[in-house]
Length: 240
Image (spheres, rainbow, N blue to C red):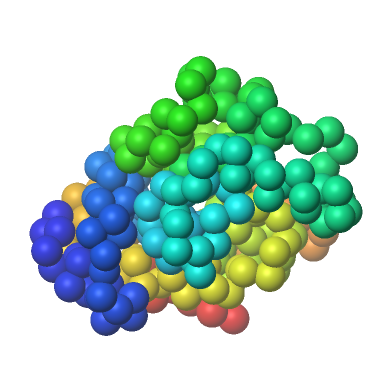
């Protein structure tokens, strides 16, 4: 793949890219080199959302407006303790962060048992670029974040699925970001194609879902389109 061409393509919609952003994307491209075009695009899109656009590994509680992107562990634990005391973390029953198992990386694993899924013993290792990128790709490819994985979805049309079966659920719950991630996916997919992504292959034929079915129970496939119809679908998707 021509990476210079790829980065030139994404600088339009993303604007100037900080060196940390470029390094984060490079690490993801390396870790995801075996993925097909749309799977790679979705990894990049999900990471863009999870990092607030920075694309680099971060610690939990770090927001885009924070000047200090690498606060101490004590600072992160203090922020989470205060939020928990105020009842702002309603989904948390037992504080998981006090031993240091708070989120780190481009897609954050929290709790010690989730770190162990990726073979991480030293939590801070998840901030290393190569480790963070491996976690992001491996987690999405094999369903280690939420149980849903990239192969559960028919891309590119899946990015426009309703919330219950949207690929955003590979990483997170219904956080209102489905359309944002879909737009990023389309941007990254176009840039990957223009740059000659090595793993490019025709997108799988979209299938209709049976009434009451799920994303994993496709019904009768649609008629086979022409090569050019598949080509266009692979890059831009088909919306209904």
